[in-house]
Length: 126
Image (cartoon, rainbow, N blue to C red; front, side, top):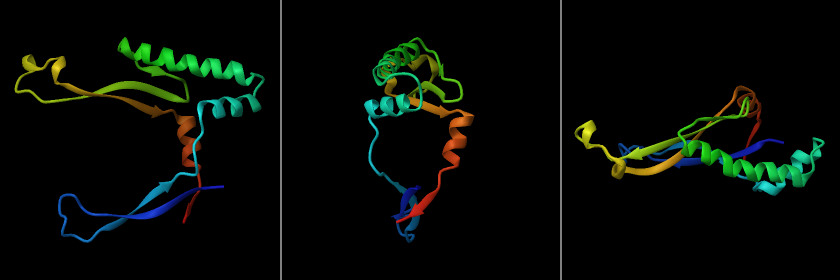
């Protein structure tokens, strides 16, 4: 099985008069919930769905807590999570305060084994 994609026309935002170019866009085949993930993990391990669910639920608590302490959370070959922010600019460093922070985001950087699995995915045009 492969990931399906479609051609999507996009205009150049810097020059709207140029003809659109076509770019690949992944077409989702559905979703996998946290419970679905726990069930799949339990099928290939000796851990029950309930135990897996408990660990995953606790990750949802522990990871944000660590990032709130300013830490990068490294999960081995799975990857790492870190906090990023977007802020308004100021003329001087002294003028920059917490009031200029407008958006918080989480950056995920995939580990080597995770990226190898992603790079091995096949694609099919629809």
